[in-house]
Image (cartoon, rainbow, N blue to C red; front, side):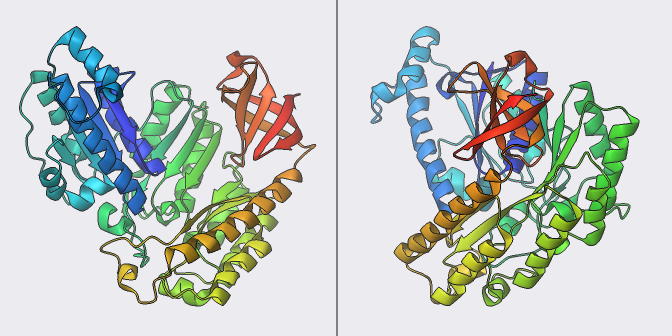
Length: 461
């Protein structure tokens, strides 16, 4: 039998899709080349922005047509030329049911309402219902009718989140968020913070070592707020992981973590990073805004000045460190003067790159009811100014690295030139260089020769 995943949103969703895929592989399922020929399609959803949900709803409409054609209904209103793989599958195999599962944050937000509005969906699996996937897969294998998923209140971590054959993978260590930023839907769909047991994390690292994985990224909605059952803090966990990697002579060389809250980026954490070369010197730390009044109304727990101080501490303690951030424009009530504080923060910190977006009201969050919502056109105009400035800073910051010789993890073959590989640096930058594809999954030394867009060009030393 065959499966197909469509995964939207954050790294946690990617990890959770991979954990379900491991279960399918263990039961001898194969990955379909096209979703229209799969027995099971799983859409892992995102609710952070309304645009993501609208895209997913469009896919549900598409799969409604696919299902009809798979069962021989060629009178579907969807054009047959858009359904060629489904039509070919029916021609070759006859009527074979397709089971559609929607999981993730949007599934959690809507639950039963999603299935009522879109009967094409066979199973709605919320954030806390993933433990039921074994039963879902078995039901599909046996040709049983879909059963109702009971949503639980306790989050269960998957044993592994490894994608077959990968040398770089995610390791979820905590889930949920207690911060309740006024614009954010995450605490409502992911729940309160839950931290994974240390022994489970180390056991997964041992499994990944056997799979010859070279790089891991520790994941959590608020990753550096980790607090284990035994009281282990995130800095202590990071130190234990690095020590375990050394003691077991693990294949894992690089350790990353995402996403970090500036309020939890302690001096102790900086010291642990400084003393452990396994931890990569590139950090994604969300600033969100540069104005203290807006930060307060966002319910962020830090000030502009505290963020700037953190950036200075990191650069002082960790030479070569690069910072990535999130920046939101157009929060309700944001004045032109307050908006300018984002630009001045960018000038002061000089982020290597940013995830930039304008405020999008999310139903169920406090900010959606705030007065003085900014018109969309104004939000777009402000966002463009942020994008332009960040583009300038990215070129400026990355250009300073031309001439350096750096370590690179060979990643994939270039789409533009099969004689070239693309790799990533410790700071998670992209580098293109001539090399044999046999080097994929290994570390090499590369001298940076030039910068093309946001990608370095280099040559192996």
